Amino acid sequence: MPVRPAESPAGFRHWLGRNAWRIVLLFGGVLLPLGVFASLADEVHELENFFFDDPLLWRLRGWATPALDGAFVLVSKLGYQWGLIPVDTLIVLVLLGMRRWREATFALLGFVGSAMLNIGAKQFFQRERPSLWESIAPESTFSFPSGHAMGSMTLAAVLVALAWRTRWRWPVACMAGAFVLLVGVSRVYLGVHYPSDILAGWCAALAWVTGLYLVLFRGHRRPWRRHRAVSPPSL
Image 1 (cartoon, rainbow, N blue to C red):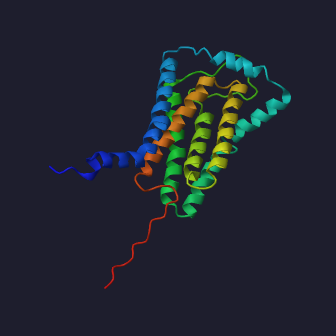
Image 2 (cartoon, helix red, strand yellow):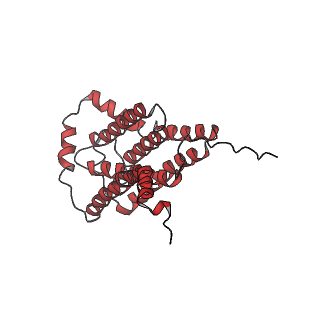
Image 3 (cartoon, rainbow, N blue to C red):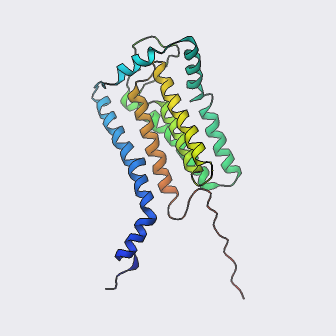
């Protein structure tokens, strides 16, 4: 049987050269975060304590000042009801207004799916909130994984994915990363989440958004790519 071009060594090298970034993204953006999340979830399910949770909580508690209290309460609110939800909605509406249907679908599924996954995970694991001290911003829902961490990482990952083929990718990546870190630190500082809750939320969101990206933007379909118009056949 004749060897197909894609099955020849040269064809395989060509395929690998074009798809190496997808393999790296699959491992670094899906498999590795899922592995970390599964490890954390297993320990939480077995009611085990993480060696780093309480020390990090007390370390951030030692930073407490009235100024930082106010700043982190504000960051925490911006990381969800005051900032995250309005920005998520605005992004989807802007993409729909621009008729970027695939990008809008990616963003909508990313935001809604992440929220649903978080709600389901909280109900499944039912981890109680930290109770080392009385928080100035108490929460009544379950703790694992952090909804603020998942929401902020989802927003960051969606924005970076959408901006990656533009000149804004590095400014967006830096600002999104700083936002994710600040929101995560604020939740630990306020004593309403264990650090393991934050890490789990980051990993779950990253795996979800990366998986969506790999499914929705297959082959030559990339964010902002415009398909060439097919000219009518000449008579």
